[in-house]
Image (cartoon, rainbow, N blue to C red; front, side, top):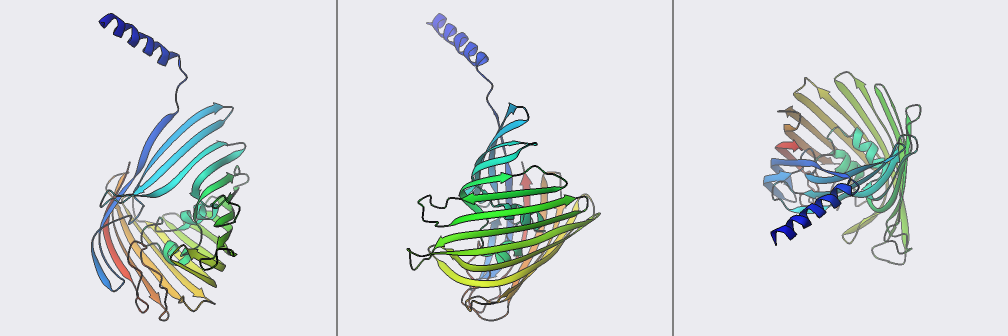
Length: 346
């Protein structure tokens, strides 16, 4: 029996040695946990939270060199709550073919081209209290499934990105999106322009399809240790979060922000958004802002403090939140919150 097992082991080892090498799979991600005191929904929220600077997540990534400069990449990300360990929704899941000469073509679920660009502009790193995420974008499309995405090679400091999604893939145009973005990256200056168009069934009439359009202009100007950021957004059309809420709206908002690196360990950021909604009475004009401090304990570990607040111009049925993790603010409430946390990248 021992002889037979030895022969089987030798045969298995020989088969593995002769088989083609498998693509290397890497695991990376963030764990972000904070202590928080916030006011929203008529309550004072105290306790541990997750995602003050980055959404806690795990990323599995596999890459394979196909030759002639062509690479295949597969990515799967899942979110989680650092304070409870509870698994959240899928973040990015896609497969991609790319080369420096031809660009990158991918299919699956990932950020729209516009979101990839204003995500870089956002001084809060798209954290939990980000005014760009919570006030400026609100119900605008930003991460979509069932999509094709293409990024051109960068030529003369210019790169274009485009995407189209199939929605529910039933031919109904339900939640289909089209996104196009162009950016310029040269030295100390970054500029971007983008547009998104979304088609969605209305909640009260499944036979009706309505659309929305979002336009973005923005940039970052670097002056040594200081980055100044700006993002202008115009929006018009029908927006919905099925099955909870829908509305028609038209307006514009402006973001101003900064990132400042005092030294290798200490960084500051601030961001302010002013929203001017011109049509829908259910929404209120609002000013949303956040300030934060990051202290680097190492290249992978940071401690931080973030304070955010939203001030509405009038009472309204729908309020902009300081965080989507909290209860919806009351019709006459201005939410706010303070986080002190730690983030580790691995």
